Image (cartoon, rainbow, N blue to C red; front, side, top):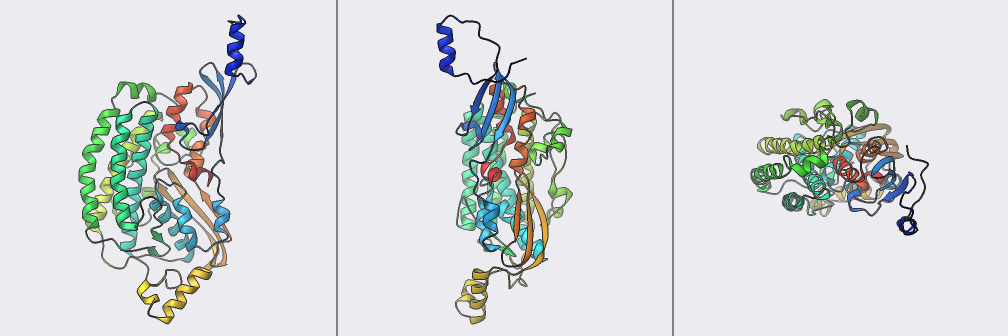
Length: 413
């Protein structure tokens, strides 16, 4: 067993070797990995104790990207907070927008029309594909497979073009509104989405062929950092990381929202819970998301894209604001005081690409939340690092981090 950890610099080792001390004492070395290391996927720092190449202790240190989102929410109206949700998991802003809007609508006891629900499902599943493309591509790049990243990034850019046509922005979309969405679907846009699905699946199969049976990729992921079913549940893991450990929990199936119960799809699960299983789950989830997208495109209902009875929540159309005194006053009140909500508290969580994204809102009435708490899946998923990283080699830590697929903007908030 290693002795108590002591700081050993590279210079100390060289000087001791120069003095002829070839047999160094068996002692643990403390290594700081991050917060600028490329494989930490943002500003995560790992404080590692090493016995040679083997990790004996791992302490994740977060907070470098903390922006106080939850406190900011208490000082602005419900509508004004929508753009801040883009900056949580910034790889899936459309899904974040929808989850927050549904939480506030639950507080207001407001039901949105079927077309709005279908649009939210559509953009959320497209966001899942986009986020997983980035996750799988960056994971492959982390452990030496560059070609896959070029494929996945190209497909992600095609999705961003579709997002731009829909929302006017590629990255921070702020598309969903409380009570609806910002605008209806552009003419011909659904056909473009269907066309993307047709050309995407063969490319996904090619990425599958490049990685899934690749000997180097298998050596770096199979049997590495397994997470048992019991540990995954105990540490609060959700999303692909939980399903990779064999737990078939998916909020879209278990607690359907936005009409997910209308669509047919499967929930992929792993058997061993190692890095390889977590990769396979994300790969299959993209295929299932394409399956959902095609069903939504085929069955997109007509009708309004916002709740017409939500006059005190949803901003009136711009042309009416410019021509009607009543709508002008309504818009002024919404902008200055916010949508008036009843007193109460509510919790809602959605199945986001990284896992269960939850919003807990406490209202004392009025247009500003009294308290808002975000349950970010990346933060919860990282909680298992001190347990699962122990016994890994340093190179395995890179594989482990990539397989967890976290975003620090969501973790630190």
